[in-house]
Amino acid sequence: MGIELYALDSCPYCEKVHDALSEAGVDYETQWVDALHSERNEVKRVSGQRGVPVLVDDDRGVTMSESENILRYVDQTLA
Image (cartoon, rainbow, N blue to C red; front, side):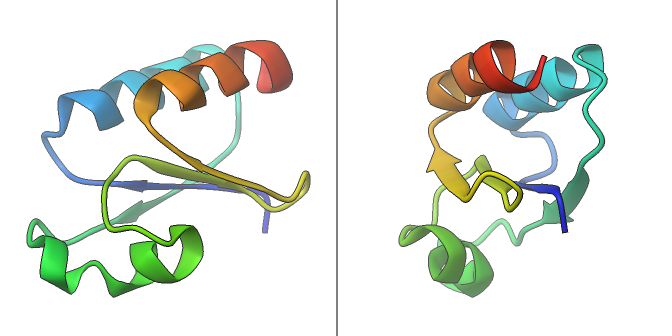
């Protein structure tokens, strides 16, 4: 499955992660989520919480939230 990014359209933190993944040349799939937190059941299922962005790296068994953590992971692991 590779790398998936759970993101919300127009979310500035999600945009930063999108930009970092693109700049690093990482192939990934975006899972667009609902604006309502209460409707983000898939995000809750994979990460235990409903906030975005959430990065899932199936190849390395990593799931993480918080854009700063994800940006650091992209820079140190995926770039």
